[in-house]
Image (cartoon, rainbow, N blue to C red; front, side, top):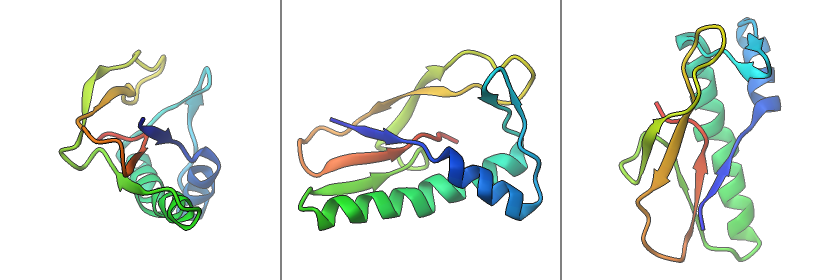
Length: 109
């Protein structure tokens, strides 16, 4: 089992704090480099860390992973966004054990 999490509301709040306008087309976030920097910070940092800590506190062995590590890699790009930006990749975990449960942020960069 691999849990892949998002964090849209926290990303939106961090973008507002950074003074970066949120861009979406047909429900898809348009991700330029400045937005990607915020997304990685929020997902791989704050959200993933809190999620893993909560699971560990509840007695579930979990470890946090991001697309920056070698244990998670893109399988290929998802559908192209309708108005620029980067396509979202499909991911594959190279995690071969049952515990701890890998908790992965949904950004590969």
